[in-house]
Length: 107
Length: 120
Image (cartoon, rainbow over all chains, first blue to last red; front, top):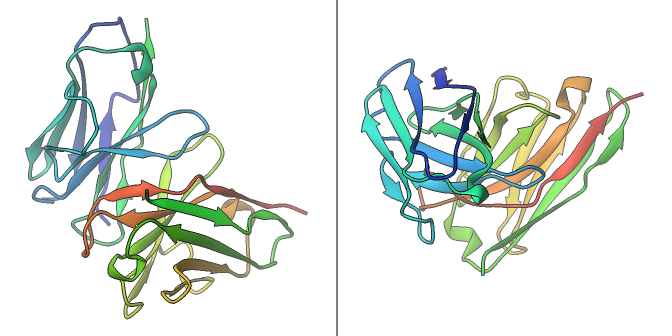
C-alpha cells in the first residue's frame, strides 16, 4: 500500500497568512494526488485534483503543486471560513489512501 | 444538481449485518465509478470499496475484504454496501462518493454520510 505522510498534523495561523501543507507519498504516484477540505460534521469537499487543478467553484486562494512523491497545498491568504481539516489522497494505486489530515485553526 | 443520499445506518451488534444504500441523482449514474469511504469517530478518512461504472470490477480495502460487498443497480441509480460480520472497529460514518471522471479519479461529490455503530 502507498503511505501518505501529511504534515503538519495541525497548525494555527492568522487571517491573511499564507498556509502550506505538505504530503509525501511512499512511492512515485505521478500527479494522482487530490486535496480535500472537511469541516466539522460535514462531508469532505474536493478542492484540488491531479495535484494542481482547481475544482470548479473553489476560490483561487487554494492551490496545489508537486509530482512524484512530494506535494504541496497552499492557502495564499487564510480566511475564517477556511477553518477545517485538509486531507491529501492518492489514487495511483488501489487501495486508495489518504494522508492523516491537517487541522487548520485561526490564531 | 448532483445529489448523493446515504441511508441504512444504525446500531448493530458485533457479528451482525447492515446494508447501506446511496441514492444518486443529477448525473448519469451508470457512467461513473463509485466509492465508499468511512471515518471512525474523531479519526481520518479510510477508503473502503470501489465499483466500476458497470459493476464489472470491484475492489476492497483489506480491512473489509470478505465481509463487505459493494454493488450497484444502475436502473435504480443506487449504490449499495452490504456489511456482514461487523466488528466494533467498523463503527464509523460511511460516505458514498462519485468519481470525477469515468475512470478512477478524484471524488467530486460526496453524500452526507450515514453512521454505523457496532456495539453490544
